[in-house]
Length: 202
Image (cartoon, rainbow, N blue to C red; front, side, top):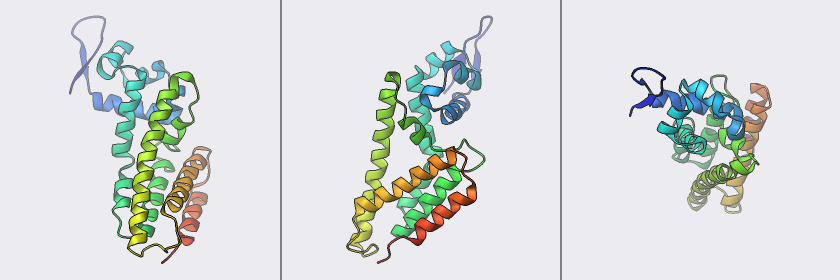
């Protein structure tokens, strides 16, 4: 796929839409949907506003594409976690994946979904609903995995799959919020270790 970056003279300059989208993702991740201005986005992407609209659509459409990229590249560990043979293994991969993705030094701190789900302006309402819907889909998959674990005897019979899934999701979101507020990596690692130490065994 190729898109043309608008120029005032001569032939339009071609740009790599994948590289531009990665740059937009980083801006959204740093600023959130509402906090990311078109000026900041186009500067980071190295294109003009007309080129952004021509290649990606409006700001909302660009964010949705960035969110797709985020899920494909940054949240790939979720699929790996759900394939783990034990419920504790699922939890361990989810927690370690969150630490690496949301709490590391390579990418912005925190979770793009958590950051954008708290958007409250009228312009961002559709985005907030989109993020919540995607999160619900992931939570539903996690509940099903916990149901499977209980059926297989991997979780105690008294453990409610929806409740343990909600607990794990809450810890994951809490890690993201604390990472975004500057918590030390060692503190976050201790939270993960404590969560796993408290994990119910059959």
